[in-house]
Length: 128
View 1 (cartoon, rainbow, N blue to C red):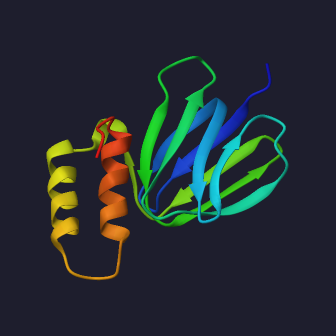
View 2: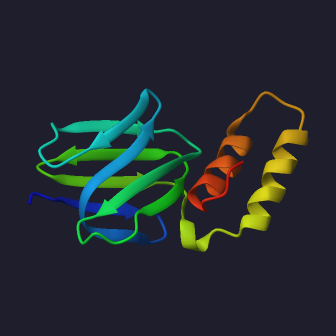
């Protein structure tokens, strides 16, 4: 079975790397699913979205809330490079709920804080 070599990194650390069956990322142009054999592509991640990686070993999907960044696909290698990355297992759900409440009550045009808080909750498996 063909697989993808995947790296999910932030400026501070490598968050996850390994072999995967599929990667799903949301770009500024829409959601994109990457399978082995995908054509080369370079995309801009939607700030405040969730990246899903399905490991090749059949383990639990890796979910991560991501901030702005890029991803690239070439020769069955996927690189996800994001300014902020928070894995599902690292997310403090109460903190994410407080951030969402604060974003909803804030006056302003910028929807990024709300999007980021909702992405953190989705990655943690909590509906927002």
